[in-house]
Length: 75
Picture (cartoon, rainbow, N blue to C red):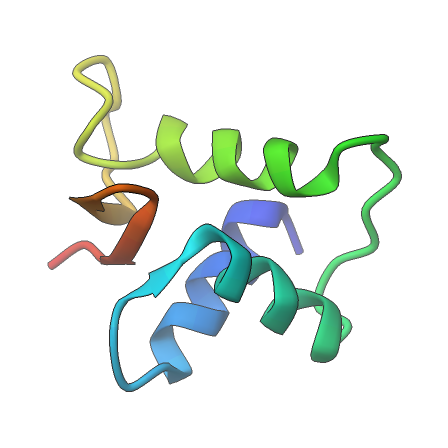
């Protein structure tokens, strides 16, 4: 499972949009991904941002940015 897939799984089971910290905390709680980075939350945030509608270069949008680091799944 990739970081983006782990975030997708968390958001799929959430009843509301989540911020980056909430997504990260839930990935850790559910043991969905093992981070090896010095700044794992930053790496995860970048992975989500790169696959969101906030990135004009993305081809397949997985996440919808609601601003201020809050995301939901793309339609």
